[in-house]
Length: 150
Image 1 (cartoon, rainbow, N blue to C red):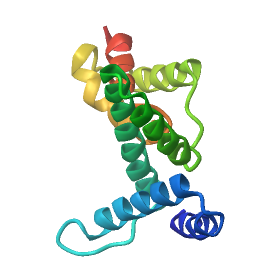
Image 2 (cartoon, one colour):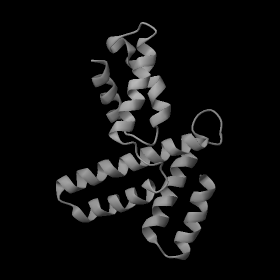
Image 3 (spheres, rainbow, N blue to C red):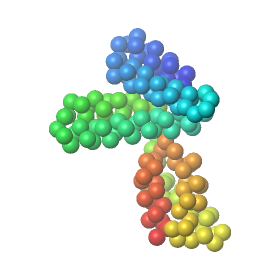
Image 4 (cartoon, rainbow, N blue to C red):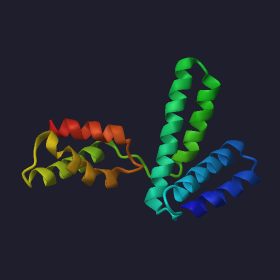
């Protein structure tokens, strides 16, 4: 994934695509920061890179919403353009039915062991999160799990 970003950055620079090159540079910087965070440097696994890119995409989406609400449409458009570049590196988003099925399976698994209600929230989330990372917003997943458990 990181190599693909590097190659795409080179191509974007050659094509003088400023939005794409700037966005990829920021994404690579975020990945590098995550790699050197902590006590010792490490190489991120592909799923960890997807998490970093998901965070960056979420930041762009939230910033675009704020700018649009404030009437700064040019800035909102710029954030949405960056979001589109980042989205091209993320796995396809889960549909509502796919997310519901993943949650239903996890709830069934957890409640079969005797844990029910909101006490099962953490256990269900542990099962659901690895399957939805980068494919669904964490807050939406948490809300859907709460609804399924109540």
